[in-house]
Amino acid sequence: MSRFEKSTIMLKIAVLGTGTVGDTVGSKLIELGHSVMMGSRTANNEKALAFVSKHKERASAGTFKDAANYGEMIFNCTSGAGSLAALEMAGAENLNRKVIVDIANSLDFSNGMPPSLLYCNTSSLGEEIQKAYPMAMVVKTLNTMWCGVMVNPEMINDGDHNVFMSGNDGDAKNHVKEILKSFGWKESNIIDLGDIKTARGTEMYLPLWLSIYGSEKMGAFNIKVIK
Image 1 (cartoon, rainbow, N blue to C red):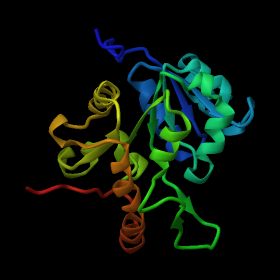
Image 2 (cartoon, rainbow, N blue to C red; image 1 turned 135 degrees about the horizontal axis):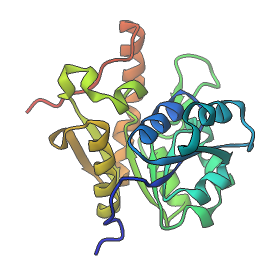
Image 3 (cartoon, helix red, strand yellow; image 1 turned 60 degrees about the horizontal axis):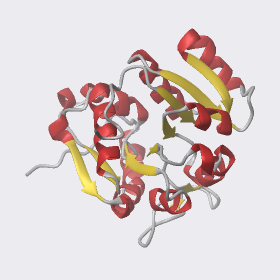
């Protein structure tokens, strides 16, 4: 039996990051029946406590380490520039043998707008996370869109557009696929690009995404691969 062969209902999930992405993804997971601990640098983060207040008994808050220890699956919703530091605070012992769903993008705003990428061409944030935690199973997905579309694909074109996955472990990707389907993604629109190196492509799409966002003044758009 696969190590992931269990119902996706009532999983304990860690959501690392208290921003809009973490709140949106965490709220959807709770709506679907999961229990979520939101992790941040401190156990009493104001945004994390507001998340708990909003969702009551299925939500909790703690440090990155607390959340990673709690979660059977981990969603990395931190700022890409801070992801490796956040995961280091979470602790390798709490990440090993777990699926890390990496939604973050390694945007570097240090020189102002538009941002550049911290990793590109020869690496990606997804690869750097996998390299740092070889016993974890990193699956890069959902990073090519606004968070509202991540959890509600039907808001665009009746849900007929694509989401991508990259990762080295087939079982982990199948497990993440079930989560994506529960978000409303059609299985035929979930494209498995291959191993974690293919995350380079989806991460390098972000400059184009930002240009489209700037032109259209809205984030409710996505990619559809036409064959």
